[in-house]
Image (cartoon, rainbow over all chains, first blue to last red; front, side, top):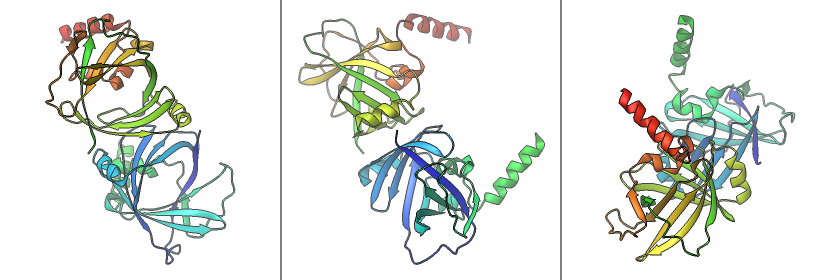
Length: 167
Length: 167
């Protein structure tokens, strides 16, 4: 089964920014639950992607390129809000890092991902990398639809703590 | 937006059966809710299909042919039970009817569908056609996963009536 092996981190500083132009992504989710069905418009191309829940950092993944016009129509069927972000690519120590700067309801959030060949593959972390959030479901893009982490992020965190104290 | 315009009927008799060989279908659903994401193995081919909820008998539909091996892997991610059926095609008065004879947990159920160009298109019903169930959500294949209508169909119906009488 084709799989995605990926680690995800918060971004601690802006020192990754170079002259690279980012590409605008707009994506949405057709399903809710362990299996995600994602419609992504990535610049001039579009993709339909199925991801299973998987174990640890390994998730089954199936991706198909689809006509942009059909992706636009399918985005209308997706849950709201759609995820809007700009993706930048940075090479570091032979690995390609994807840095997502979110917009819309997740504005302010910046996440970095690195795709690996093996779950235990050693990764040299760039100095602009912050905490690892690979296992933190809240940072899955599909979760950022239901619980955005943008400008209201502090408030959301406080609210969550408030609830926890009450129970 | 590409749409599917379809009417669905119960099948009242076996007189549709000719010498046509049916093709075995196995399909499952990756999502639950208004938008369905279907993985279908149809004989030697396979498809990934997104259907919106739509209005009346018109539903947005997007279909992509995918490698059979990937469909088999994706079927493992689908809700249980999978829908198993044999599809027969019969021409009647210039329209192509698809007759699905279900197996597995829906064994005994036979449904006929006809795809139309327009919602109000006149349809000459073959004499083996029974009640129309186009608007009856229970006969959607995605619903037949959660509430199969096979040999236990009578019991399911009685149980539903029992519940209704109690409320």
